[in-house]
Image (cartoon, rainbow, N blue to C red; front, side, top):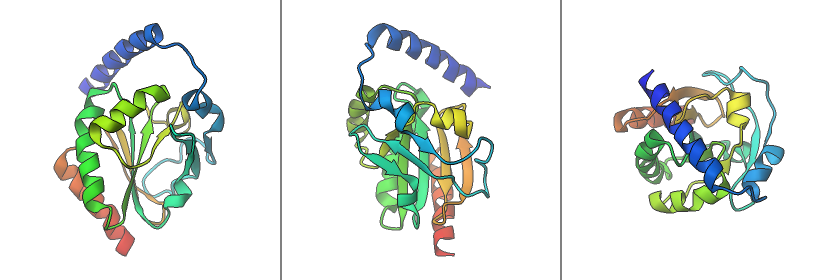
Length: 186
């Protein structure tokens, strides 16, 4: 409950600042809602289910398909640049990605309903080299994600092993990544 309250307070502040500060230029973020595609119905994002197909735009205009990551363990992290817990866990995600890439881990960041211009400074600040896509309500409306950060851990076959809402600490990250990498070898 505390996280949800803190999240809602941050969301309210961010929305007030965003609406006052941003003019609505047309760019990849604006188009994301039209270009993000998902092939699934609400309610099937759960452990033990295959992760449905998804293609979404990245800030550079290219698209990322989850299908392109098949054969790898995948950590999907839904975040926002203004979210305190998201910022707190990002260095751990980057470190885990770098340390476990050779073992087969891939990470995909999903920027939740943000303007594309907010991403470059965020990516630079944390040294993020994994792909980040612009969501614009796909994760919220179709996957049912209501809190951030939310992480989804997939095995190499694309099956959801764990969904974790809230900030992940070092020991949880190590255990969750080890579990999906172990499924890769099984």
